[in-house]
Length: 41
Image 1 (cartoon, rainbow, N blue to C red):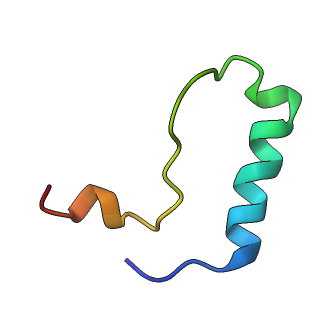
Image 2 (cartoon, rainbow, N blue to C red; image 1 turned 90 degrees about the horizontal axis):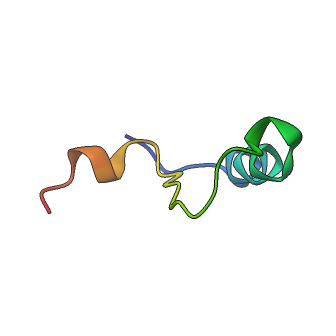
């Protein structure tokens, strides 16, 4: 994984605000380059 760029966060926010994301409700969407997926929680 790597540290994300602000532009990547902006793309995720734009997607969530778009009509294509109209079916997505009440969910956490980690935009962390996979850090959460490989972290030992």
